[in-house]
Length: 153
Image (cartoon, rainbow, N blue to C red; front, side, top):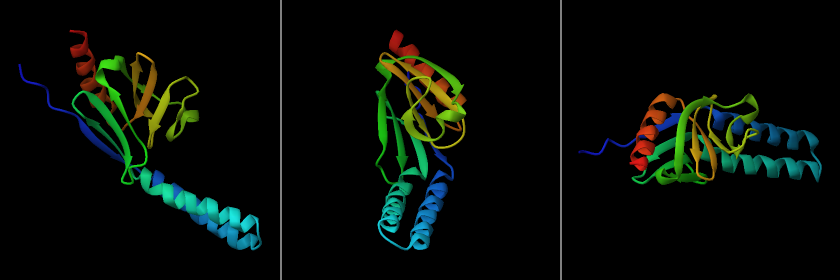
């Protein structure tokens, strides 16, 4: 029996543009305030956002053999792997509006990794839940269901 082909998908959306716009707003605020410490704080926040924005140009989800890799990029600051052996159940879902974008703990429990939109794949693990935002939810769920089914045999 041959192994099913791996999964690889990159989602691109303008979250980084929102971050760059926020950085510009911070710089404009610093210029308008014009005096310390307010302008120093606004410039520092603007620089921090400018440095982090390249980490959110895209979200890549890739089969890494025995685990699923989730990576924001191109600046590789934020990444996570989820071993297939830890997956119990997979389903297509939707994040809440409160869940928003980025990486954070969901109000419903579990970690959200989302670049844009509300479509996601909910991965139930032995120790928690991961909400993986994607514009390719049906295909990712189908791929992961195959991996979970193979783990059970």
